Image (cartoon, rainbow, N blue to C red; front, side):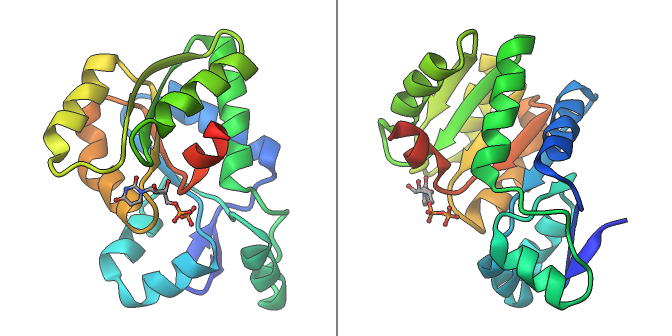
Length: 192
Ligand code: UDP
């Protein structure tokens, strides 16, 4: 049962529970994707039906910040807490590093994903970053092929909303990855 906040159902999870759920999706057969809506996403979803459906269809819907958590409280359907995408990503990375899972970083300006990869590998010894690609490309095909060829288990898709959510829905299954996470500007943060 999801908690409805302005038309989008959120998973009512703590950060620990969300990280465990993410790990379980990586281990499960097939393709899955996670979204991290903030209040701006909910407004966009009101006027963009394709984006709305992309949010509703996600396997994990995490309350990215206090805005969603406050809205939930005001609506009388409190959530356990916020699960910022960047925190969720770091928990998942720690788990991936310990379990030999392969991470692909997609998005941001040329060079940023490579820098993020280097920083993350320093911080999480054992982490396998199996590939990177910037977020300014015309054709999806070569990017899908790069992810598939890299044997990625998880892809962080950092193209901004709603682009990243639509990209995951359209291209995720063909990549062979088990989990994609839409993470907005996170690669810029990881790149420092
Ligand atoms: N971006 C991209 N391709 C695009 C548009 C944006 O890779 O076509 C990247 C941009 O460089 C930035 C991220 O997507 O790294 C979006 O960051 P923003 O802070 O706008 O996203 P938010 O976290 O607010 O969703």
